[in-house]
Image (tube, rainbow, N blue to C red):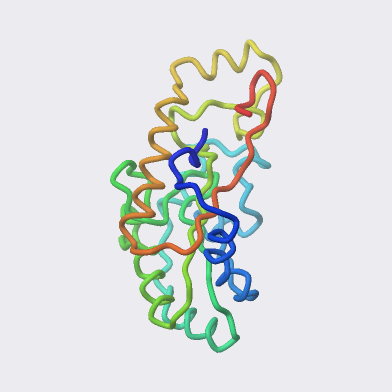
Length: 208
């Protein structure tokens, strides 16, 4: 899954200039947030505790961070001397913290009903901070994402994987992924950092 093929070529000097702000910034904030925060254990809770989609749905149904105050967060970050902030737009669970047109599994369909990423970006930009997006290549919720060894539904034998993955199409998921990354890099103004997380496992039931 190569997202770099369409990037323009640059000289070492151009790269140094492009990365200068990052090199100089040194201190920033990384916000890890999603449905898993309600479980209050860890962001891989769905995998480690082998939670099914049906069981995990309660976190979607209850999601309503009505005390979210991005302007206060941004102000505190600036006062602490931070120069940038990165936030999870979608973690491995597949839940989107932004209003994507490619899925219903998103924050605007929860009780909260608003685009958290939009409000967050506007608040941090208003304080003069650079903004970045984390986006997971993994998606344990998408119906076409094939089940592998790090999936909550992982199994032990090849035959079992074949049964579980029947009808799933990673090519469709790749298109979904690229469309969402395009949304993130188009709908929220200039994004200073894009953090694409995960290196797929290799082998017969990996994607590496």
